[in-house]
Image 1: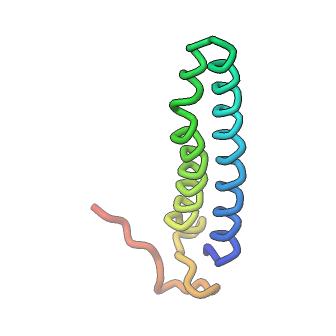
Image 2 (image 1 turned 30 degrees about the horizontal axis):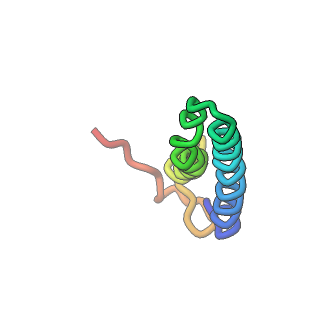
Length: 91
């Protein structure tokens, strides 16, 4: 089960890694453009979407943990497992 700490850690990790990746792409691209290499725009333009992609991938991994039941097919509710909470297979 996902708790509040996992969500907070997701935000911190996604923000930090996204900022680093986007900042590096922006910095290198602007350096190339300032030195007369117009190909530096290839790094500048996708910098923001590339930094957001890291957070999106982390959030998908966390959401997959919520959606998967444990090995016996039980879904965790409030920290406890109970047989009546068995996940039903959809047809």
